[in-house]
Length: 117
Image (cartoon, rainbow, N blue to C red; front, side, top):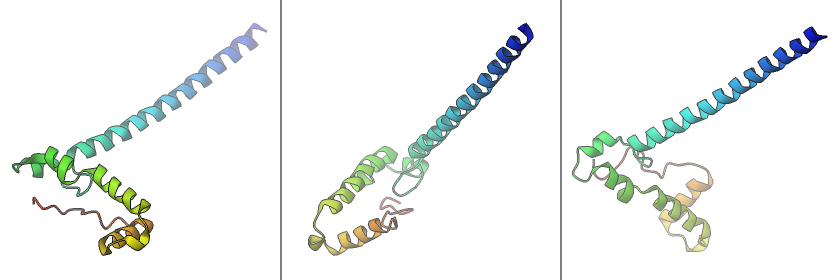
C-alpha cells in the first residue's frame, strides 16, 4: 500500500514538472519573439525598412525620421480616415490606397524608399 501511494506521488510530481517545463518554455519562446520584434523596430524604420545606421549618418537621425517623416500612427490615421470617408469623395490617390488596403496589398508603403537617402 505504501509502495502504491509513493509510486503515484512520484508519478504526479514528474508529470507536473514536465507540464511546468513546457509552460515555462512556451513563455520563454514568446518573450524571445517579443524581444526580436522590439529589436527590429528599434533598429529599422517600420515603414521603409531602412536601417538605423543609415539615418544616424544623416543630420536629422533615426529618431526624427521615425517620429516625423515615417510616423506609423500617421499611416494608421490615414487608413482609418479612408475607412470612415465616403468612397464617392475619394481622390485618385485615396482610391488607390483603399483598393490596396481592401486587397491586403501593402505596396503603397514606401519600403526601401525615403526622401533623405
